[in-house]
Image (cartoon, rainbow, N blue to C red; front, side, top):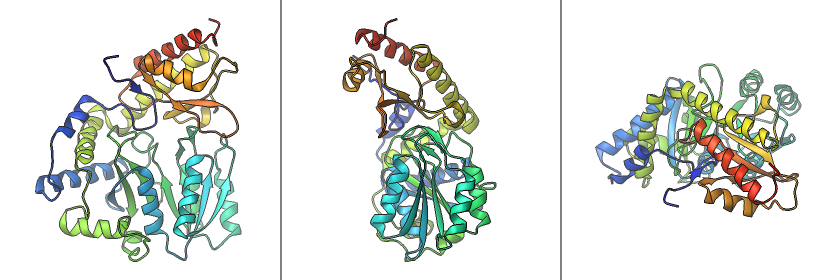
Amino acid sequence: MSHAPILLTPGPLTTSIRTRQAMLVDWGSWDRDFNQLTASVCEQLLAIIDGSTSHHCVPLQGSGTFAVEAAIGTLVPRNGKVLVLINGAYGQRLAKICKVLGRAYSTFETAEDQPTTAADVDRLLAADLAISHVALIHCETSTGILNPLPEIAQVVQRHGKRLIIDAMSSFGALPIDAREIPFEALIAASGKCLEGVPGMGFVFAEKTALAAAEGNAHSLAMDLHDQHSYMAKTGQWRFTPPTHVVAALHEALQQYNEEGGLPARHQRYADNCKTLLDGMAALGLRSFLPAAIQAPIIVTFHAPNDPRYQFKDFYERVKAKGFILYPGKLTQVETFRVGCIGVVGADGMQAAVNAVAEVLREMEVLDI
């Protein structure tokens, strides 16, 4: 096959040629031009949430999980306590980060197809006054479930607590306005809905909270207070930055704005999601989540109930037809996942559905 397959995964994802070409230039990490590139990226990211007056954008080398760990370690004081809201693997991971960092935490877990509700959070905060922070996964990538961020944020504020949002899979596609939704930190990364390449996380940290966070961090490399202070003073990253990743993200943001910003990106993903759901339903494949709580980012499907279906065989055959899918991440039922994000439109999604149909016929799983 001459063309690289399309990645129907929740990041890394298929990027544009322009974004890939931006990585053909080598940058000096101390160079003024590269420093301007970093500053421009941070400015554009803040604009997406209307956060420039209230929050700093602190970029960090590494995957999104690096940035989540840095946010917890920097912003939660060592005597703080985090309430972690869990309905999937990434909530579990956030709780594990708290454990490894030695931060006190409690968890509240709902089923993988049940959003956490604001009423749950209200009850939990009333019952435990030691909680200082609430951590929420906005869109849980293990299923594609959307948790009710605005309602939860209001409850957390009403209790005088701080909200940390893992918006890895939602930032740039689902609206989050820092002037309307109170949060201490929102965390995302370069390789998701912005359609950059993986390698850089970033944290929108509330300015006064970040200023007060000196000495909290468990780690030199992951100290967001130190990272921000050094950048503010010098314009440079403290340690070697992922220069090519930053350049690719700068180019991806240019395309994001050309496309029409968040509303246009959301619409394209929503169209992709609808094409995918309709097409798979026509093949008799059921989605795991009801439509009301399905974010247009990644969709989990029940595996066909047929002894001839094996995911590994299915995956390799679909890949041979030009599409890379994602295994399921659920514990109770067998599933597979299909991403709706990246440089792909409704036609591409329909082609993916057609490929799945052909493969299931070849495997004699579908009788159509």
